[in-house]
Image (cartoon, rainbow, N blue to C red; front, top):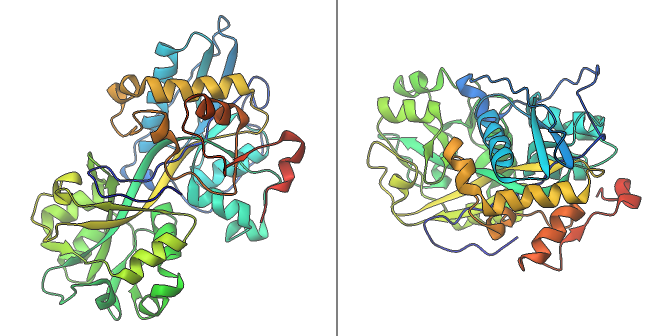
Length: 378
């Protein structure tokens, strides 16, 4: 991964891209039960997209997209492609979360999908749900769509000042089933901070109930997360309005844990981080260290190279068009599409060609070979 730096938008980004004529078409009859939900779905937004292939364009891709905020970003990308490409058409297809999208694309249900890099890493390593139910092929990397930066907050009056103080505290890592929770607990399980995690009292409840539980002092500390430069997610905004909180100071051990976990990126925000995440109160810090859940557009291996190349071009050159429809799409150029890329994990060859042409490719990265689709597992 790229080295972290200290600036206003030092967040790690990735994405994978989408797909092709005829690989997937439509979602089939298989019933895939995802093990976790889209972390952006907590606000309950729902959207339907009925994009039809444009017969005047050379390539068409169907893109699996979770409901809620992810759907908002997906529809914005669809709009950007419609306005800025003469060769590619794009249809949004609702899909059941990031894990469910991984399984559906494995069954050739569509050409690309919004999937977070932690889920992709687990699929490659056969961890968690993929240990008992592995996929036959990985979704290949394409381009970043948006990051969620995750960090720790504590109620005032708890005596919690640093990450080490979370030992023995009641800690809320988001609702069971959320990818933000899964990524947080994966980070906490890393050796440098596992001893602190072992002593935490982990709280399980719906995100809708968490602000009230914090107000009632049943939760000492909770994660916060949001898109940098835009703000926190809805339930965090609610506890910001109801409870006096402060940032839990990161330790060197926490930084080390984030850096060594391959499913998350490290970001340091040191230019007015309270404003970066739109806090409505003084959170008592000049610097936030966050672990990032990077949501990407990942591709089916058989999606035509030309289609993925064009998708990446639109993302890199016309991000403003996409952001006019949904501001959470964060990449502003080709390099942004790559930040946070997974090492030793295949890129779609169409994406790789685009990044090579733009001069932002790292020769240590892996270009997927369609003759070796099943060979990229650890």
